[in-house]
Length: 72
Image 1 (cartoon, rainbow, N blue to C red):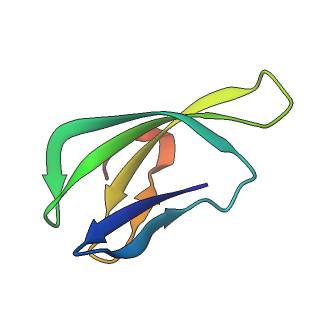
Image 2 (image 1 turned 60 degrees about the vertical axis):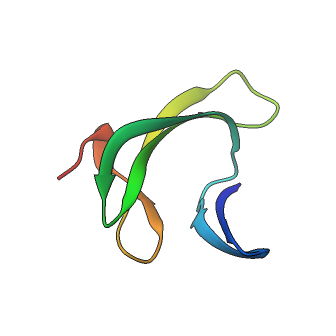
């Protein structure tokens, strides 16, 4: 699953997960890094009840999932 950014009908993939997961919920956090906001996602492993949260922070090129939902 991933996050997209659109400008004038063009789009860029900003986050592509390395895990097989579904993003069920996206929350925009009112903090920014490199000009884009932090994103908190609620993720679910398909066909299971396993759920977790990811904090995504823009590194200037793409969004990256942080370690333990903390900005380091």
